[in-house]
Amino acid sequence: MNARTYSWEDPVALAAASRTLSGLDFLTAIAEGRLPAPPVMATTGIRAVEFGDGYAAFELDPAPWQYNPIGSVHGGILATLADSALGCAVHTKLPVGTGYTSLDLSIRFSRAVTSDSGPIRAEGHVVTIGRRTATAEARVLDQTGRVMGHATTSCIILEGNPA
Image (tube, rainbow, N blue to C red; front, side, top):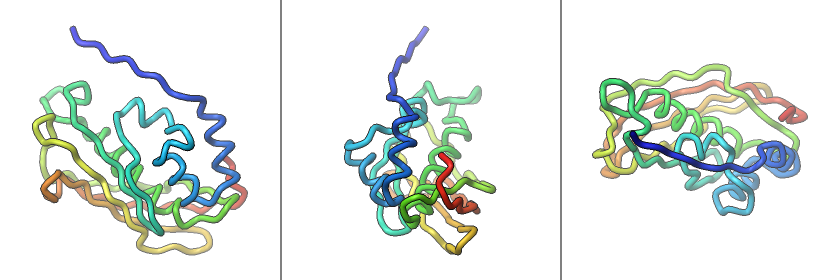
C-alpha cells in the first residue's frame, strides 16, 4: 500500500487577495511564493511556473498516484493542468476587481502520459478577449516539446470579482 499526504493554506485568504491585485500581479505573486498556491495545486501536484501578458504556464511531474486504471495519468489531471493554463492566461489580462470563470473546456489527448514521460508543461495563450468573454488555447508538452494534448476554453469575464 502506498500513501500520500499534503497540506494547503486557507483558500479564503487567497481569494481575498485576488480582489486587490490585477490578474497578472496576483498570479505572479503565487508563482514567486509571495501568496500561497491554491489547494488544487497541492492536491494534483501542479506547479505555477510562469505568467505574462495573456500567457500562463504550469508544470506537473507525472506520478503513479495520478494514474487511471489502465496505467497512465488520468485525463482529469491533464485537463486540470490545461484548464489552469487556459484560465490563468485569461486572468493575466484582467484588471483589479475583475474575475472570470470557464464557460467550457475542450481537450484532446494525443499521447499517453506516465511517470516515465518526465515533467510535462501546459502553456496557455489568450486568443481573444472582450468586455464579457475571452477565449484561450493551450498545449500540453513533454520536456522535448512533443505535444501530449491540446485544449481550448471560453471564459466569461465577471466585473466585481465575486471570488
